Amino acid sequence: MADTGTYSVDSIVVGRSARMRAVFDFVRVIGDSDSSVLVTGETGTGKEMIANLIHQSSSRRHKPFVPVSCAILSETLIESELFGHERGAFTGAIKDRPGRFEMAHGGTIFLDDIDDVPLSMQVKLLRVLQNRTIERLGGSRVIAIDVRVVTGSKKDLRQMVAEGKFREDLYYRLNVIPIVLPPLRERREDIPMLVEHFIKRYFKRRGEDPRPISPAVVQAFMRYPWPGNVRELENACERIAQTCTCETVRIGCVPSTVLFHKYAEEQQPIVETHAHPSSVSLDDRLKEVETNLISWALKVSGGNKSKAAELLQIKRSTLGDRIKKLSLDHLAEEVAD
Image 1: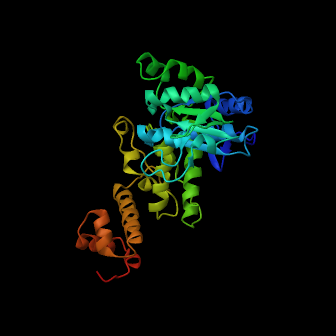
Image 2 (image 1 turned 90 degrees about the vertical axis):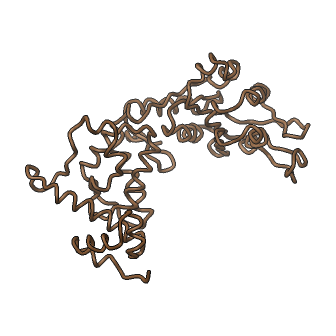
Image 3 (image 1 turned 45 degrees about the vertical axis):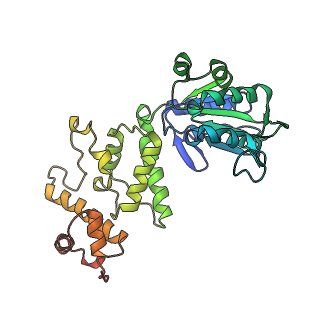
């Protein structure tokens, strides 16, 4: 984690805004502590990334980092997943299996979506945190564990405690060191850097050189509220890299969900900066968008016009007319339909 003004872990650039710098500076301070950490923030704000950063900043960095999403585990599976099971513990348990706590021995376990853990399981989790031992499901052997526990929550656990949905004693065990991650809309200064980083990453994964990004694209990303936060932004950048056929990533390459959201009508339309900004042709811009979409469909379909027409939800004959009109015949290799 170099002190260059921009922070990253595992090649993921995560921000240089004042609020995120404060988070990373705090991680440096608490890195070597063994105290439990509770990371809270909206979905997609990067809770697992911060947990990984905590692990990489600690003396446990050479031991396992084991992330667990509690949200995807049913009440019947979560105990076996976390604590393991012995052969014969239940139907299908044909051999002994260590749980995630054992796998994380000496390192760090990250329990994401701790707010989804049922009350019945919270009691057992509290006992593990108190005694630092576990018992596999169906077994009687007490197994000592040495792990640092980091948890993540998308909900306010204090409110859940007040509502009787989360144990108060467990909350205080987990919330020894709290870290709150801001949503992306509250650190918009990080958006241009994140857009550049993710678009570059996904063009490289396609085996192509990164392309310059139009200021209008950045403007569109800055306007959008990003309810899915960094995860949603990354997905939008991946889609751009998969569909863009321009020399420069332009506004027509931006997903419609980002361009045409409910707040867009309250703002001035975004216009690309061209050689003559005082004269912007609507026909030219529509032609640019249409060319991008048809080029993408032809590329994805391998030049098969019928499949390309299906992707664009238009008739094959209509696609043929537009290909001729836009002089895109060189992209449409005739394929036997």
